[in-house]
Length: 415
Image 1 (cartoon, rainbow, N blue to C red):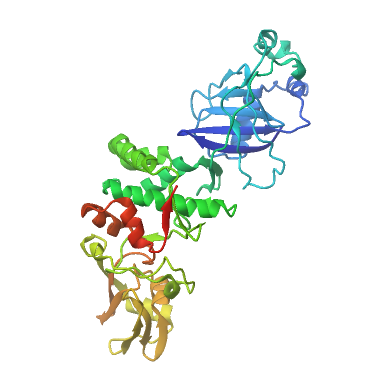
Image 2 (image 1 turned 45 degrees about the vertical axis):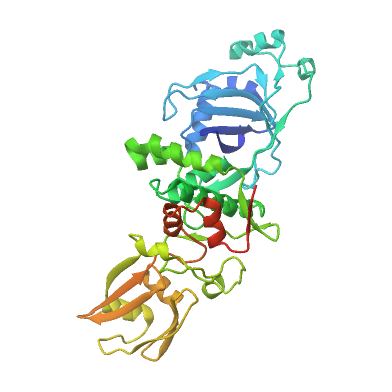
């Protein structure tokens, strides 16, 4: 019966679109094998949701046939109990999705104004019971006098950790990212900077038709229900603060040579950001090392971690011991370890950090009593904007545009 489905978040409300098989006939709902209970449309919807294990916590469902929303269902209780129906006497046009096999296709151009109104005669036929329903004559539907207004909304295709793919309006997505990536207690100007950076990061990937993930693979994202659990009684205050910061920067993004930048960011550094070329090998004129002295006041700045000597020796493939010779060969532009030699074997600071799970590439090593003691400065790859640095700048009176200009030199911040 249903060929595909799509979850769209708009204005903080999730809607489930169920696309009916083009050849499906509603009449077969009333047909059933002998001695079997007839299934209603609501039961078929419920079966589809359960069988597909759809992660949907909204209350509104649209049934779509060949791009036209034919009816809407409303769920009063979860999980999917006491279904109630409300079939609207209006049509909305939704862009037809031709390739159901491609989960990255975006649902766009939902008509919100000047909806086509059904004549009173057809309105009466819609409200009949299933046994009394008659076929609608599309040619007799009253047409609007004015051209239909099409609203083009920028949508983010997001794959959730559950595996579900959702399409979320850009500013709602940015709100969820800022809430997940930056403490709500941060200064408003820092939150604004994070909003512009998160939006730019998303827009660059949208321009490439990429699906984003809701984890640190791309940007962490939390929806409203997750934030309610996360913040508890502080939800309303925190959410409104972040939403206000996001909307104050609506549509603003960062470019270099009229193209979206790779808007990378991190939690904390050691007092200087890193040059992207020394971290990943790719050079960007706006991802270069800059001073960030505000990070030294961050609670994430300094951290000491003890690890088992034998495990570390095994991971690095060396015979590590109390007498091992450790020498730093050279540093990055951000004063972190670029190359280090341990007992004659050379490693990159990045390799040590990733292999041993260290917080940064600015670390010192001390071996004592069968343990390796690592002292790290900063948290993250160190490239781009420092979140704690941005908050420190905001405390010092800098606005979000100045924060962005500092951490992404040579760029333009624009709408």
